Length: 270
Length: 289
Image: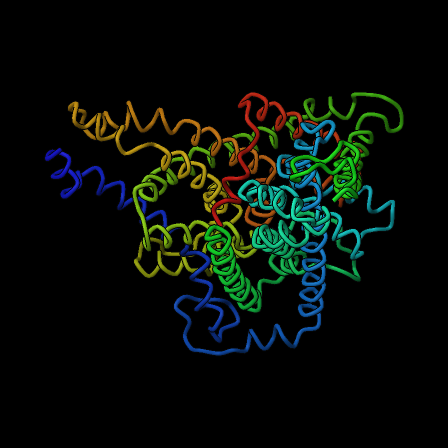
């Protein structure tokens, strides 16, 4: 074992090389998005690095622009409704998958993962075709239905994981102590899987809020999501306002990840 | 206690098929409306409008312009898959033998890009690569180039940006596979005299193959149907399949042909998933957060 000990103390040259490459890749992963942050505070009409000054004018421009605010509010509404719908529907089907004797279970499992295997572009134009005929483009219902389908795999997997962790003996104990099945579920099972459900809702919210492809097609002139508005602006007029939006979105993602991390810690401590 | 319905058995172990179906009903309604029905109607459009014919599918393979788009899509996707594999492996290897705070930081470095909007990351590449962008500033500052170079609208830029956007999807399955290799295996090989390369070649690499295959499958699948980044970074010269589909729908209004393009894409996806004989391991992406 002493050979191992010395090897441990002095890593091989190849290990150092691998680590050096790995840190380089980490920088590559983070750098493009992080560079945008200081650039969004630069005063010039086109972005430069390093910025030659500090201004909040692009943030002010975002908040003063009714197009940006309208798209943002629309996306927030869609994302909240998607989170609610996806976790409700997802919780029910997860319970059926784990605890039920669901006929054609394999088919249901395939339908759950379907939206993540089928490329978004395929789903997007297929929904455009149908929603156009059903007059659902640009509607809250259309967006929520589309985003719920897209978020479903992530939601179901998250809730399944917490259902598998849950000790069903606890529910059995509640039942044998006189609780009816609904009470046992609501008072014993639900609180136990709640952190899983909340992080599933978080997933659904981000997936919907950031979703660019389906939004691109099912938006219309009256109602478009934030990603659709960003897509148009990137394509037609690259203004520094976009950098301000990008920075705010990155910070929002960071906060969500940290929140998700604490939720996971809470649920695994139980 | 006696009031318990027969379908709802003691211990919550299992619900009757009828009760289970009832629980799954909202899901079924949603997935029919927003998944099955749209895809079925699109494929119907490609095959049966106005009457049954395979003409739309023949058009995909008959005309050189469409074959070039398909070829480019496969080529770019293959490049992106190989590049992300080469970049992700060292990072995943480092993460697999790291614990504590450093691991948390590395995981954050992978998860933050994964969950940051694709549009934000694509926009960042546009800013870096454009004619008066950061890369041109740096290169001319170092006197490597004299006049600003157009990096955008090149295949290289598309490959670079796509590799960056899809990299987390390669790192996570590799990390999961490498972390599951017991330290003892590596130590045993070392004690038997294997050098670090043979440990890698004969122990680590074979044991990480499941991670390699699910990472490659995931990245390749995402790449061949990728819309946002190629549409914004590449130009008409670098058109990939998804942009062609969009053009057929929004400019040509040729739904039957767009449907055929999607049909071909779905066939490729299905063939790949079946060939790898594994459902994409979604839980690995979900479990990380």
